[in-house]
Image (tube, rainbow, N blue to C red; front, side, top):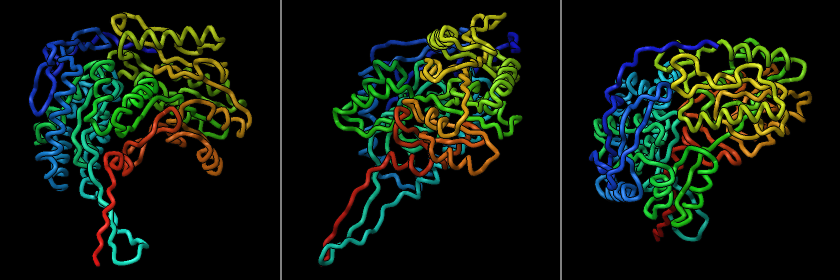
Length: 498
């Protein structure tokens, strides 16, 4: 494992230690309580900003603003105008992308080599939603009732959307929530993660610059147990769109019962990544490694259960371990760094706790296995890329979501047995398989109980292709036409003409 040395930090204007307010009804305001919280660089511990800490009263203000906008001027804005707003926002995101990617790196630690690679995705999502804006339509349906009765459907915006996002990809997560809201004519109150709120606040600035009317997009930073809980249970929120842990997702479902609000959930995973002996191993080694090590393993669909056919198990797992050892760990502002820090001390404690659990359960760490504390990295939350061999299905490291750069390598012999074991998890978000046999690829892909199956690749994403989970990984879809439908109601209209 290579370790990056200390580098000069260029202060981003939005992360220069100053105070950041929240956006409500087109105005930048303090929290009603006057409270603030700090957000720090997980690579260095340095203060980036002090942020207004929202709670129930601020959520009430933001929801009221969103409701006024939804029932007022925003309801009269035509699809073409909403499309134009999204295209303007896309242009601004593209123009300011370098600073946005740097903000993600500063606030949650992902290397610039990763955050800069999201230009096409971030801009592409906004332009995709812009295209969908003018493609929303109902149907004329011929019914079988006697007489002359005309029937058709209308697609209408759900209303006020409460959006709650995690810290592991603030830029794209923010766009994933506000894009379809604007496209469909909804209004939105966004609660970014307290660990990484800065990019969401900057996107809100750009939305205002693009001309998005007051109250359509509101951003209230705060903690999950206060601001997040208030948003999830609010009686005047029509829908909650949440990305995060399955435990919080369950709480949101319970909170939604008050007014039976719509809910879409993209939750955690313990995804199988399967390598057959006939795979192109030269491609599968880096593919399987980075299916977990990318973003320091802080990806809900990471392929953390690496199933390898018995005949190549030792060779393949050994090669993945060697690959992990060569990755450069360090401050994400260094363009050569491939693995950044975990987002927080709490996440560091969680991941290192699982490293201890894995070794106590009898797994062998072929690479990594601990915290990185060399030189300047001692001030950050770094864990070396870890590959556990000799993992059994019932071990906790093979069953529970770790959300760190930790691979659990499991051997298999029989394909039918493999599919059963791969599906033997409470989650069902992502999955992967590596093989040269097209028939095998189709057969296994059909049997895997997961929302995405990647064959000879991993984490491929596109704005037009839906993403979401089975089982405890949630329900509803993001991206694709299905995502837009999540923000719409269907109304049937009957007209007796004679």
